[in-house]
Amino acid sequence: MTPTRKKRLTLVGLIVLGVSAATVVAITALQDNMMFFVTPSDVYAQTLPADRQIRLGGLVADGTVSRDPDSLAVTFGVTDGAHDVMVSFNGILPDLFREGQGVIAHGFLDDSGTFQAHEVLARHDETYMPPEVMRALEKAGHPTEANMPL
Amino acid sequence: MIWKTIKVNFHRLGSPPTFYRLAQVLSPWLWGGFVLCAAIGLYQALYVVPPDYQQSDSFRILYIHVPSAWQAMAGYVVMAILAVIALVWRIRTVEIMAMAGAPIGAAFTFICLATGSLWGRPMWGTWWAWDARLTSMLVLLFIYLGIMGLYAAFEDRRKGARVACILILVGVVNIPIIHFSVEWWTTLHQGATIRLFSGESTMHESMMPPLVWMTIAVKLMFGAALLDRARNDLLDQDRRKGWVQARLGEAA
Figure 1 (tube, rainbow over the protein chains, first blue to last red):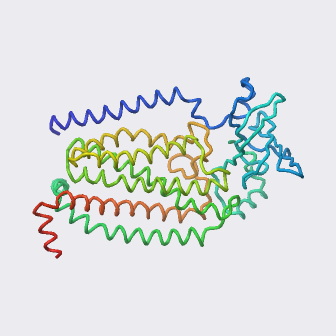
Figure 2: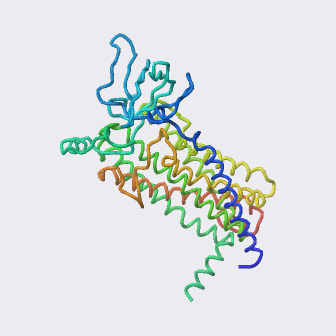
Figure 3: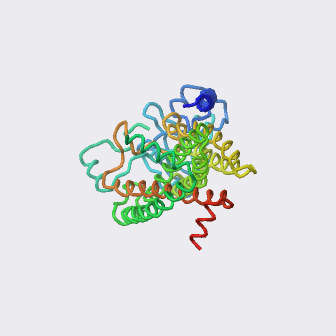
């Protein structure tokens, strides 16, 4: 390698190194803002200012979904295994919504401790399998999604 | 002895007419391989693999979405390697190759974002969310567009290529961010399903073959389009040079 090329290669290395270092610093500083949602445990751990908009993520707790027969209003518990938060929502739920499903609710915590959501998204997990395999797994008593960690 | 032959042949590729001929010979084979692999992959994806237990048939869009996303990132890595060679050794054909990759990568990034959005609407309940994975992928699209714009902005094509190569290097930092975004932060996008190095893949094996075929298919397509685009750019840049005149005369 000629000296000129060595110099250019060093420069190229320095560019990549410099940009990487700057990005690491920026991302570390923005760590909290990079989170798309917080868990029920996070909500319990800190006192949030009233009416602060947050996204709450977790699994729909088993046996907590109750729908109003005359409207689209629905309430359900969101759990991360350690803590539960009750969510109240008035609107159309995504197709994947059901007990045990991962969901993300966007809204705020009201004075009574109920989470008032104006948007509910389903969070899909990374497991793909045919229905018969799922049934076989359930029969064999394997953990289904509701018991899996987020 | 062998090493020397390889080295000499590698250096010959720096010569535009040699590179042109090689690209011309390789490209139809790559296109052919792409059509074959994509035909097998799409047939299996649409007719052979069973529906998903949860999403039913909607999950089949992943056979386009995932290979495109991988190729958008792999294409960028290829461009970054070419950019380093172009910046250090100043080989013109390599500069042209690095620049030829940007529109293809941008197209794959767009396909990834568009198919993801179409899937997200019924499954998540939204077309778009500003989570780390989706946002970093959108940034990749903008980087690709930036490289294209920068290259086109200079009168002197070689100067434009060198400046755009520096932008490629700057953007490289985004690739690990895209990959690890679902591990470092909470996101709406699900985590990685296919794991090559750590842990087990969480996709049933009956669903795997079309993903493999489609991944190979888009890799071949990227290679074919890269060679074709580089060849066209070379022809355009050298249109007044003797070797192109001789070549066109031969074709006429």
